[in-house]
Image (cartoon, rainbow, N blue to C red; front, side, top):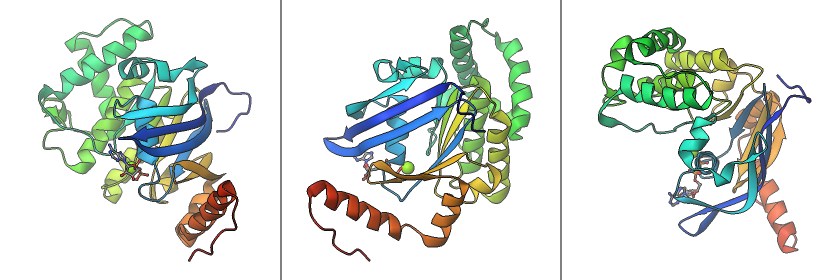
Length: 272
Ligand code: ADP
Ligand code: MG
């Protein structure tokens, strides 16, 4: 829900980033306030995952210009684990498997790190089991998954549910979900999207990176952003997602060609 007086949680200004000396993000601007749900859409390769990894602090990505403030604090100065502790959560597009590490123990250690930061007491295994059991319901997950290694042998849908379980436990202020909908069948999609809706409050915010309109049938975004060539080309409401579904991305290429021509001081060439 949009409230213009709600506190700003995340403020991204003119963010540029590169990976392996290749410029990927070329001036991203985005402000996210408490209570808001933002969707970022865009073609493959437009830089959506790069944006999420830069925000999470992935070491392969270098910020070359711009700023990111998280509740007024310079996020880019903080190591990734500190970003997580203070309430930034990234749900991976491709959750990794960690053989040999118990899912329950992994979730408990992560939850305790966050709890300590918030001034809550740490939970021992028994107390944590009670907490986690409540949260399992959010994603309709079988407790048997807690006894297994992190994501090992989980199906695509089970991995994504495990991501949302992690999110439910960590209680982030800003959750970035990178294509949490990809690879899900319709039932798993409903469960995952329902979990995201359930966890959204007036105090936190969600940034959903998605390819598909169908996720936005279940989760209503306050803003939809279209990313192209490493920047946000256009921002609108939910109707922008519908427009993308109907018209595809050709108009994005045309707008981009105009912008790039203007930047180089020449007349654009017709595209398409
Ligand atoms: P999206 O998530 O929108 O599909 P990505 O952010 O994954 O886009 O990728 C944007 C561009 O950055 C792509 O051209 C991709 O090949 C490149 N890229 C992303 N990560 C790496 C990496 N680790 N090494 C080399 N190129 C990368
Ligand atoms: Mg991606």
